[in-house]
Length: 467
Picture (spheres, one colour):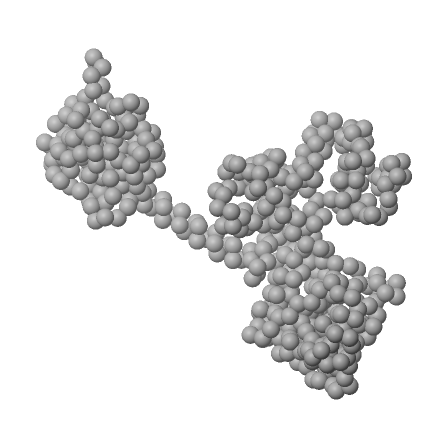
């Protein structure tokens, strides 16, 4: 028993209590020298009582004392000024040099006349807690892997089904048609199919079918020979040949002209092509993946897309749900985009306030994931705090706050009347722009009927389509 260390205690009971405590306890005299040291302190720090008593608490090299590193003397310590130090997480330096995570508290002890007798400090070992935290972080990381397929993120049931469909598609060599609204990540799905297929080591070539005129697209896809047309000063291979052995991804397939549709159908049927300006047939070995944000079957019914090509393309369809139908994914997508922006900008933004998250969850996201990513990037420009708040968000999302407050105060019917009363030409035009001139979407956003939107547009001479 180290009774000489605990001479300052008034009873054997106090001594036994300190001996049995799991938390470390030590005391300092008015000069800052350690006067007592219970067994738990020896266990936590590696220093025996004999090694500690008589030394300064700088022995422990706490990394945090009143937001400072541990001072050399008690006069410099903030305990004299503040009188206490409550439950702060920090690290102390173990005898073997390792950092030990602890919670530290301290109290200044005074006699009846107000004179300083010393300091009592308690230390709680957090090593097990930190281990548990690491295990939780690892579990979250593994869960994140479960919620991710390559660069696609989603925990909703609909996205889990998409992941399963991608895996099935990757195991075959069938032609794939990816359908989904703009901004849903169709190119990411095409990339995931390719990267998980047997062609992963070969090229993935992407062509946007709407970006080029018919003549340029023909040359881009199929290549040309020297002299085939004005400006063709040398032979050039097309994207189909560049993708040899790999995958060709044709985005915006619904924009193809009838002429290009015929040539594409022939290639899919015969697996051979002719460069522009020559009659030589060239065999190709590629997998074709196409994507569209349009209803391709409606185009077929309207005579704008070949029916035989449609069925050739949709051997294996993959439908990507819009973000408004997978609200469970919004929070993890926000966390993902915040992490990306932190790495890009260096801003220490760690999350979103409750009020801002409510708006982000209630917003309809006509631009889908691309719009959400842009919203977070916009917020990073404005946000000066650790959490993104309402007024850091783009204006079209902030308008939701007005609608939500109106609903809360007046009920649905009153909300509609309030919105109508506040409607202005400027507001309507801005909402049309934000909704890509989709009148049904505008009606949903402002809480009126589609017929009412048409009446407002007629009243204010707003054009039916985007000018």
